[in-house]
Image (tube, rainbow, N blue to C red):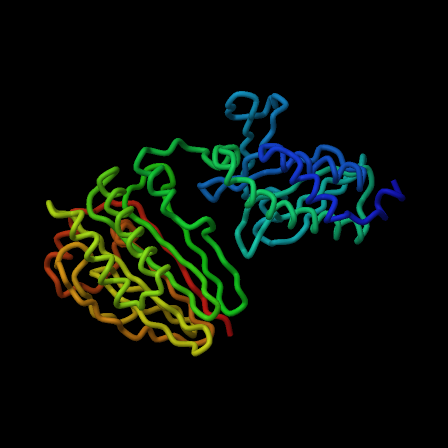
Length: 377
């Protein structure tokens, strides 16, 4: 055991082995390398599910504890609350549980703040610092392995789905960014959408340039597939304009024009499109009939005072106002859709456009979506 514990993991060899394996077996290969290098046994990968309350142990050996299966693949649900798995993931630290026969080790599998899951393994002895360092390195490498290989297989997405998604939710999830979280030094961005299995028109998006953070929050009128289609058109138009290098006002104008052309028989989308200049530490925003964001500053939460233009898809040829979004180092912004407001029913500011108010009333009880952004100090 001593020789194995002192052996450092060869990261280049590890990644080469993963590249030579099928995408569905990528996590298995990493487990085999850990077993060889550290004398580990019972190596398993648990992926975070869409609910945010559990991890799913992926296996293909016919686990008796599995809650569901598909072909040879099995999925066992492990709650986050009150478990070493949960402590490792929420605390972003390696957890060790010592026992008479050795120790169980739980390492967070994360990338830039995205909680991908947990790496669990058993050792015959309590690990030393070098071994824990190797396990943490392997878990970090596993995050990249999963992110790279989930493009080629449904296994990881299947594991995350502890509830069945509706058709509208399937369409909507394809609109969302590949990761809901990004830690990038100057800022931290985190987003969430619930319920995961039955949603239609709420979306968020973000993208990084060298000195700029782009983000958006949109909410399509209606329910189910119709709302998902409206959201698809608008998000596609916003991305198309952004990727062509259009400024904020031009992005909004082109997205509105595209939605107006599509939704000639009715239908609109409220939204906010923001741009944060990380070098100048300034931010601007277009507010298309959407509830304003909340800002936490110096332990005080308040609505950000924004003027509301009509939603996207209502007025052909509309020019949208670009407004200043006041920010300071350490601020926390919460962007949200009206589903959250309808659920909690706080007093909220009214817009100046009656068509927006009618649209909101029609969407009572919608799912809620909320990304938050925290500029760095």
